Image 1 (cartoon, rainbow, N blue to C red):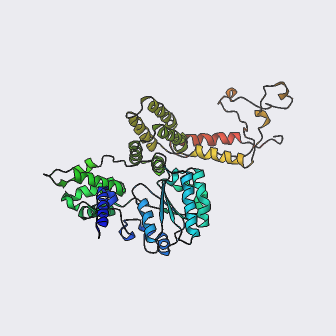
Image 2 (cartoon, helix red, strand yellow; image 1 turned 90 degrees about the horizontal axis):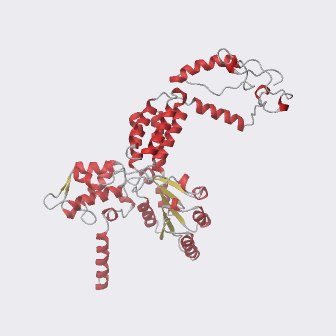
Image 3 (cartoon, helix red, strand yellow; image 1 turned 135 degrees about the vertical axis):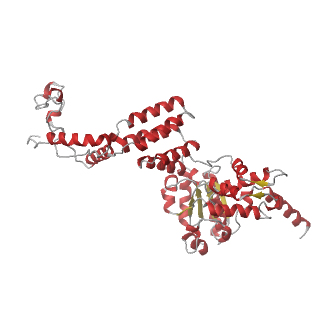
Length: 445
């Protein structure tokens, strides 16, 4: 090796050593890649595509730190393809078109088509995504898009239809622990040269607390190891906990975290599990979720899932919304916790939700019922000649407050109270009233 090569190698070694642990421990081959056996295991589709050398266009989606960028680079290495990287945050249509123009020249000269890797592809707007369509369909490039969002929400349908979608999962705790131990035992890329002991409890804590995000786990491990003193040379659970300053990770208030946790919160309340509901509420609060959004969801749930089984649920939810608006966080967490607990334990009914859904479906399906003449407006002179109001009796003039009239004109039932809470009482009341309000229809109506 000549002096120039030696100097270049030293520079490369210094630059590599300056990288954070997560970058140094990035796998160099697919064999080193941890996790994702559901898409990379023997016989799985992505593994077969990589082996064939013609991956087409794919979209990798999953939470931060699960290996999307690393996997894209490994795919390029395994298929011996040129890799061109763009970041959707800093690149525009101009940069995309320049890359596509160069790819066209490459393919036209007989070279293999390159791989275009676009990180955060959900950040591209529609016109930027549309700029990719023609060359993706023509096979000029193989597109690998990476996103933390649900691609069905964040990526154009036309682009999705031209791509294979692969979901990456958070790293399981056991595999995360193995990765951390490997980082501690690796002399070339890891932290073995630091001569620091990391306890099993510290490894276990970081494996669980980082929610499957390998980048966060390795970053916290590096902070913990570099922070110990010459006297201790030991990382225990307390030091590991202190090194993980942000326990909630990269909560995305507009992406999958937002929708998945919202869904978990609502379904836990609907399922009457107050403990689970309060936990999901805490996750969203710790992630910085907008309390106005939370309040709106609880108001909707009070009508949608509790309804008249507990008529107090809706005014309580509305009061909570008003209180949270006035006091804000952190105190609003108390109001939200109280409301979530109440709604979770309230009797449940979606009878009102079902009723309006059925009625609106009838309207949409053109089952339009004419207003009976007795119910039509009588506030103009000609209405009497038209027979409007004829036969109508006010309920206020009846001894029991119910006028035995047919207010619909056809035999339809939409509201079916459940046998729970207040609606059990309303169910009996409704059956009695219906037996009086549905006589045979007059022929002139």
